[in-house]
Amino acid sequence: MRLILLLFLSTISLMLAAQHKTQKLIVAEYRKSNPDRGNYNYLVSYNFQQGHFISKDTIFEGPTFKDGKGPPYVQFHTKPNYIHQDRYIITRNGSVIDLNTGKLIKENPDWNHRFTEAIGDTLVYEKWENREYRTYYFFNLRSLNYTKAPEGAYKRSKNSVSNHRYLKYSPNNTHFIYPSSGVDGHNVAGQFRIMLTDANRQKSPETAVHKVNGPTIQNLEFSNIGTFWLDDSSFVYDSHLLLLSSDSVRYHQVELRQYTITDGTDKLLFTIDSAGISGAPTGYFKRDAINQLHYTGNSGKRFLLDTAKKELFPDPRFYLNEKISVNGYASYGSKSGGLTIRCNDKVIGTIYSLPPIVADDAVAVAYGDVGSNLGYPNGIKIWTKAQGDWLTFDLPWLNTIIGWIEE
Image (cartoon, rainbow, N blue to C red; front, side, top):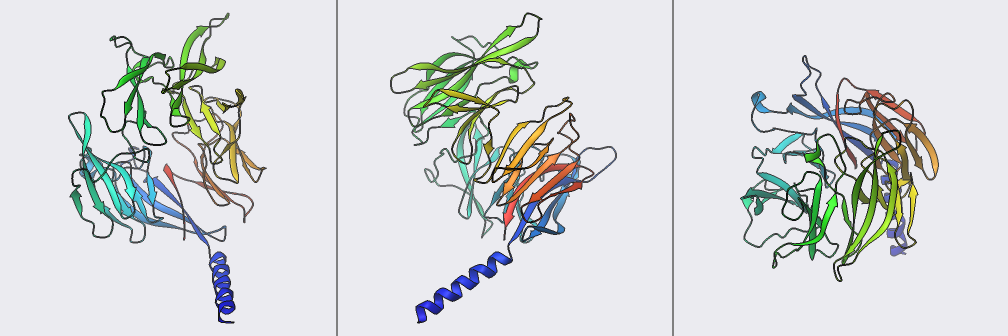
């Protein structure tokens, strides 16, 4: 009888908690100034109770740069920013804000100390020395102490954030790959080798793939290549060939290839015959929330890769969680289009926007007029299943949407 009563009370407790579910969208906004310099930030929350909007609160405010100069004080405008434990915001420059107190609990005045990983109540930072990350520091979120880590106390892994965004660890953390500029000792802009190294650095890096072409863009020195580990022994990469159509329009033919480290085989998986050219420095591979592998090209167009069946599908739906998916394109200068967003396979809107930021039954986007520069969006739109429609918040100057938390 006592067990039944306990189970009943537990069920009631869970039901009451669900009835008072609060979701908060955390957003960074600039203060409008003259001239517009983006030198003052507001960290705000858009608060939803049971899916319905109830309020907007300012959590923190402060300058991007102290006294208008020096290293960033809080910097949100270049991603990524991180939410940890639904309580802490780790900004792009490594400063930390406590959402519960609204206080800046760590100012990171040294760009050489870069946030690397959050492990429980410890944030790991790494210091750049002699062009290598070699010294680690721990910041304790409870004591707020910042101390040098003991030798060997931390080892980088695939979960580590890196300033070298092209460095990729294998799933079992035994190897990593990265592109290196130049071919056969010659530093040629837009041409690369793919280097393979064991994660323990017991061996010198070796060249896995000797010649790979990045996309041809205006600033060729920023061109790079996309890579992605399929499993512990093989990775995929892209290579671009610049061609000229009969009417003198430049385009890329893109090869998606698979390299296996155990036997050195390098095979062609797919060819994208006519890919447009944009200013994006590289294409990239990414798995969605249901583990499908996608490739987004330099042109912005996305493809679904079925490596087992050797099939390539254009403009697939990318699942942001198990319920919410997106497909389509928002292209600068276009006269139509946008991202089509679905929840449980039902279209909830087509919006010219940046990629959606999602939570359980909730979506937020930074939106603009069709064809506009989304680096300067009009504001944000928020959809929840409970309200069944989009709320629009036009803003003087949106910085970035950071993400959702739940209480």
